[in-house]
Image (spheres, rainbow, N blue to C red):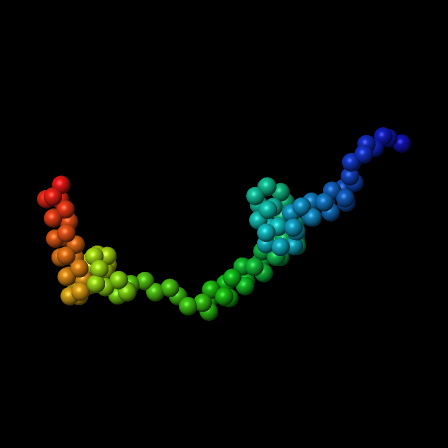
Length: 112
């Protein structure tokens, strides 16, 4: 009969403590296994699979983000820059705003 110091765990106890520590059975537990470079248990692997299945299904139904010209900032210097960025003919309010901005800039520069 050998000496067993306080705190020594059996293999089953170590596995149970590890599962408690890593949150096994969740996607976070799966990522934790990857982060600390330990073997990924079956519960975590299945949780990751179900997470990605759900992610794929929701991404198919989610509306796509539309990139392009948005006239919300028209009438400002930033609106004029947005016209240029998207290669759209500037509207009159944006032209006037930019002309005023340039005139103010030149007057400030001349006064300095």
